[in-house]
Amino acid sequence: MSPLRARLAGIGIAALVCAVDQWLKVFVTRTLGIDKVGEHIDVLPIFALRFTRNYGVSLGMFEADSEDMRWILVGVTALIALGVFVWIMREKLLGDIFGLALILGGALGNIYDRYSYGYVIDYADLHFGAFRPFLIFNVADAAITIGVLIILARSFLMREKRGDKEPGVRPAES
Image (cartoon, rainbow, N blue to C red; front, side, top):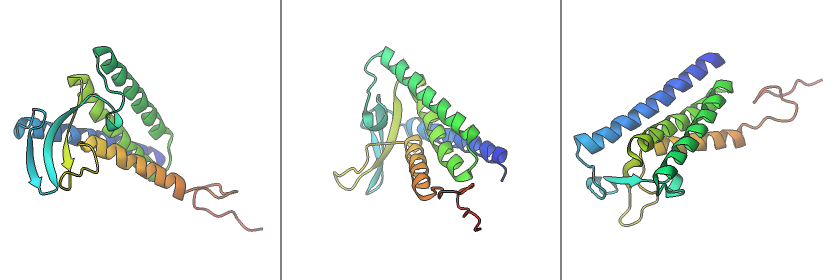
């Protein structure tokens, strides 16, 4: 696949992730009516759809406790998303573009929420009894996490060897 086609596919994946994220948030809050903090539907013994509002960013850090802070978070996350978009447009490797596309799509979904509502809608609650290995999250959060893991794994596992012109290609022997 040419780098241009890979980049366009990445933008398509980002758009799809954002659309699925927003559709699921509407499905949970409007169709199922889970739209007040604490309301939930148990789907499985270990998984529930539980509405919550996230005013912070990753792991609830940097909570926007004022209107000014809300817009600062929108601006900062938009700048990060712009940086990821530029990275996609410069990247040549499909695997890296895929990871970046997941990050971009998730970021756009959460930016839309923060812009529209002042908070991010989270609803996916994975739990084992009272133990919750993750905070309540959404598709955008999952996409961002998976995208970051892909980028990290590829950066550690796909390192160029000294003298390589392309990743995975051994230098010619003399």
